[in-house]
Image (cartoon, rainbow, N blue to C red):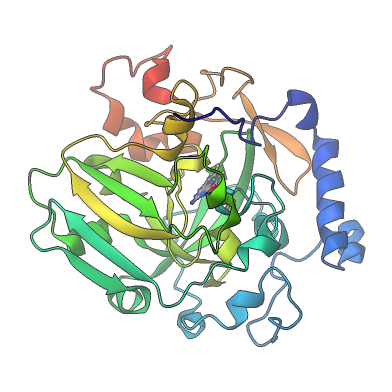
Length: 339
Ligand code: MTE
């Protein structure tokens, strides 16, 4: 039986102030030895691939030696953008949720232990032919692009990130699912020797997530392999993570190793921890509060302000039709559907 452990994202509203963001940011920069940047406003790109920073041990050290580095940057797909500043890379790379490496936001150092090569991805279940493919072979054949996406965490903070990767629907096409497939289940790596958080037995490891086939083949669903024009650092879910920006961030599962097509709704990591608070659908909805805090607004990390949260995180034009015929999918919204 699972012992209920509160995720660290269960913050008090009093901790979610703009001042808190500034304090955090200054602390982060000081930890990196970049304290001077806190006052000046740091550049969005603070790492160049030519800098051999692995020995320096910074949050992008692994990126400098990533075997796929030469493939970047991917061409920008201008169909995906946002009207807000790009969040500084140093914040996105050092303020993370990755419970495999700890339940605090400062896990980037611990996450450097994630060994990202060799890395194989299994594709199985209701497919024409199960297969296993290495990440570098997959990268060779997928249609690579960069997209600017907003990311809204259920903890009521948000970032705006240039992700590199490929459309999930391209991976689905490559997998050749059978007509009987209704859902796509995704599974993260499992290696407690490498990831200390996976020794915490009250969590139902490995991290698993799932989408309906309609969600997985929606244009917005994106497989991320890089950010800010470079390969993903381990702490952001290298070498392959999901980005479904109309859903709360916990749906965007990191460091994936298996894609299983199925006719049953898959179990998800956080709904196994507490299904009454973190359900399967998890569509961003400012009108449905989390049981312990409001979802009406969000902290824009790096900007020091709160902004209103939008239904589907502002991606309604792209995804609202997915939920049009679902019972309860009209205001005031059925909690089971949207949490
Ligand atoms: N994936 C795995 N495997 N483990 C996690 O703990 N946390 C989720 C999601 N994917 C998580 C995960 C949550 S709650 C969020 S908000 C995002 O990752 C955070 O992504 P970021 O650290 O790149 O901002």
